[in-house]
Amino acid sequence: MLKKTTGIVLNTLKFKETSIIVKIFTRELGLKSYLVNGVRVNSKNSKMAFYQPLTMLDLVVYDKSNASLNRISEVRLLRANQLISFDFARTGIALFITEVITKSIFENYQNEHLFDFLDESILELDSPNAKLSQFPIVFLLEKAVFLGFAPDQAIGYLDESRSQPFSSLELTEAKSYLESLMAESFHCNQKVTLSLRRKLLDHLLDFYSQHLENPGEWKSMSILRQVLA
Image 1 (tube, helix red, strand yellow):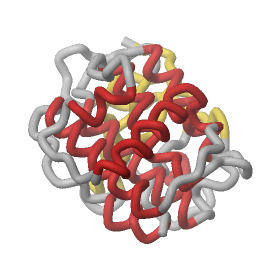
Image 2 (cartoon, helix red, strand yellow):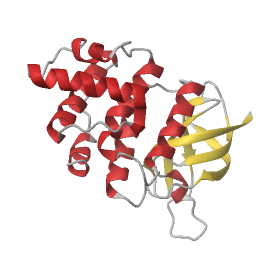
Image 3 (cartoon, helix red, strand yellow):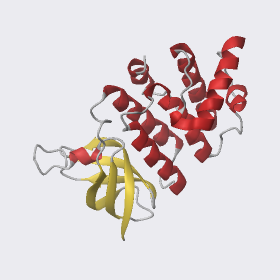
């Protein structure tokens, strides 16, 4: 059955010589995997650029509920990112976002509110005014709300964890910073040290790991540490 939907590209895997398997989080159908044939070719007609991380697509797809792989009938670029693919810091954050998404939702998982939040997050990341240094932390805080395990108050993120890397002074500052981020989201203007931001990011990923099933190693963190130094 053909269905129309919008989708956010998460990642791709090479398949045979010229094809890919692309994982797309769609608004109406949820997380899906699609086989796209003949796209990895040196041709001006190749649509490989459509399948970069966090690209927003307008799709017509074949949808079989019992199929692990479906196919795309029609694809159109819904919105071209202006900065994400050309800025090293934004590209690193994009890889981090896609890793967090793929590790925290499962195939066919559908959540229109989460999709809309991701759409807004991509727009913010692609903005020249984006506050990149705090972006990953804000993203984790906001996304936890949609996944259903976010504490009501900032102190919950600090208490509900198996690790406690903060000194008593840092704990007070971390709580204040988290409260500001939760209240002002991506537009928070409060400044903290790089050291505290790194500890908070590690702490939040540990918090996520406790709530996710087999999250494994966070592979994008090595890149993220370089771009947010």
